[in-house]
Length: 397
Ligand SMILES: NC(=O)c1ccc[n+]([C@@H]2O[C@H](COP(=O)([O-])OP(=O)(O)OC[C@H]3O[C@@H](n4cnc5c(N)ncnc54)[C@H](OP(=O)(O)O)[C@@H]3O)[C@@H](O)[C@H]2O)c1
Image 1 (tube, rainbow, N blue to C red):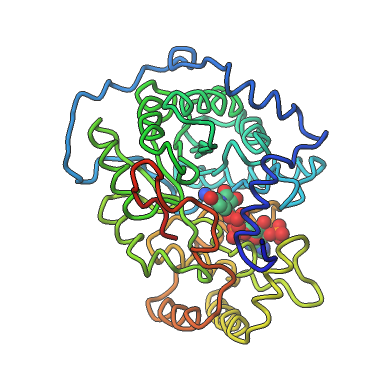
Image 2 (tube, rainbow, N blue to C red; image 1 turned 60 degrees about the vertical axis):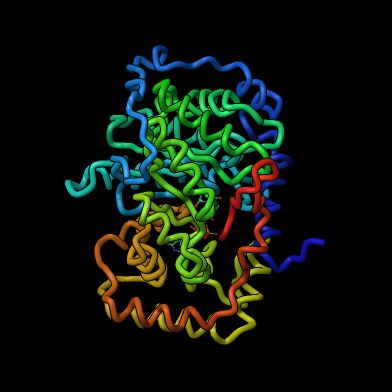
């Protein structure tokens, strides 16, 4: 039975929201969404692009291959379209456009040349991709990097499933090649087929780089090797990491990514807002996150962590606890992709790039964070841990 106090509940809600969270505010129906995945026929030629050089070079070594260059911080768009967990309301689309526009100032500031957005076909069943595709229209494509994700749903068993889903995402994103195409989480049965599908999407020029998400060490190595055989670099592993979820640093996953030259995108870097310090018992977050907050709040160590974060923020002009959380994730060698849905949030999050934590501050945060009884453990998450066909371990944290 699901308890209301673990993260698996949230992820279940996320899945439920993907499947059931459809309402009449969405621009097209769930059936249309699936039909689009089946029928869209977009190729490199229709996008006006050359196919990626059919990658002749075949290699079995695991040396890092040259991959994409990403900015030090991205913007996550799970909440853009998700009704059930995040309470999305299309009336706020104008504000989301402001958030997008502010994020785009980052690729114009003379320091970073691109702005990174993270979305997925599951987020609002395509709504998040549609919004980003729409907002992106007015900007030069070379200033934007859009990362989206293939959902390994049980009935998707063939490499072609990946290509078809990718074509539908390309269409929703405004007929532009996808900068980074990721497998959203391990599948229970068809993982090698998905890697094949990623390679096909790359070779057909539908995507510029490929990545995975929620992959453990063994799965990461196997996927990296399979792609390397075709001369394709595995660019990224998008994993949960924050001051309240440090497992990848402790179980060898972060190290394995580094060894293979796979960049880490850290998701939920603000622990769904719990690391911003803005919630109080009188003003808790709304919806399912209220239960997470109450669980954390019941331990004094959580308050100690927030206090330390505030003290560190006070030592840097204009800094906030949320920026401390993001700069901790950066100090651990990852690219955080915080979610934001107001102008104030996105401004504050990019403000983290104006300063860095000292080594001593990182150590102090590590010490105090290690004591917090956090709100979820890897085993709470509902991802398949093993490929049932091959026995390959797929998920660690
Ligand atoms: N690959 C995966 O399986 C996976 C799973 C989860 C997330 N992700 C990705 O990671 C992204 C970020 O993770 P997340 O959205 O789960 O959580 P998060 O980034 O840890 O937290 C986002 C929430 O924190 C609050 N917030 C953000 N910036 C703030 C600021 N500067 N000051 C105060 N509050 C602030 C907002 O909550 P309020 O709006 O309620 O105030 C916001 O919705 C997602 O959008 C998605 O792209 C991927």
